Image 1: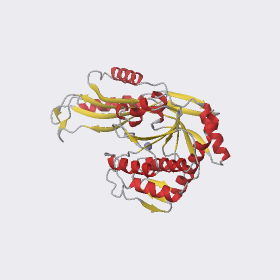
Image 2: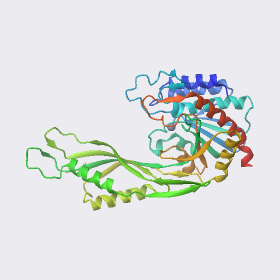
Image 3: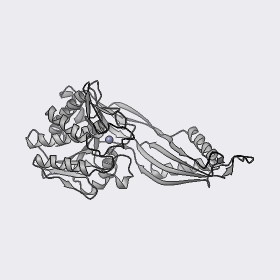
Image 4: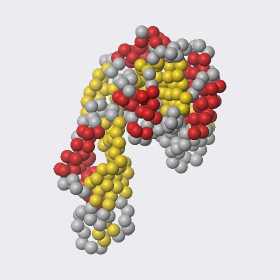
Length: 374
Ligand SMILES: [Zn+2]
């Protein structure tokens, strides 16, 4: 693939903010697609789709949204230094978007043939399932396999092949205790102390774990529960009556929203906190594990032919393979030209040699995959 075009594209994409409104980046992507002679279709929530060929297609997906800049002043000023392109979303997931756009050029130039759906999705970052762009697009997809482009490239040249990911359960928790002035003899039932009891109880818990094997590789997975935010401010001399917490629970395959909530309720009962703790705004994505061995083996085979070190891996974080895989029944793998470990970091960068290398590999991969599907 043309490195100069890839670089210009990712640089342009980084300079367009897309953490809230994705209108401007949508315009850029749509005109890029039109300039290549294809027809972009935009749905109600802002996903962009390009359909190529008349048969049941192979799905290629990348997300256009990023996390917020959170005080990073140069977040939208792409700077290149020592082969690294700095900017918010450079790796997650604008490298993936740029790769898809240039793959359209490869199709235009007939370097790749076949039926494809390109999906540039919105609302991938921290949105409940109902708002997730990939989820929204599912009823309109006629595809047999999917490749989700997320940062999976290491600076040492290795590329990871994501064969699954943990899911997520998020809940806002309100703890109701007794509010009182700190000067009065103090009972221990103020909301902050009750919250501490809850957090300590949570830390004692042994969470589910499982061992899965795939292509001779063993994956040991376990769930994690973390309180990520806590707030109780009713004055310097007030033992608070209300305390707010956010629970972030990372689940493994077979756990459901129901099973997690059941466990939470039994934990509260044990801690005698049952009528003091309330959950709101809970949302859930299940974990995913791709069981399509043929698909995985085909990717590994092609990598070998290309002298690429491709390592099957299971992601501890969530990605949209869980949406396509679990809700669309589409075998989905994750691979991408963004740099590993850079997502959601202040000072995020894209390691350019890895970016070009992975884009070239993905081009070969989607050109060669059809011979394994027939
Ligand atoms: Zn991402």
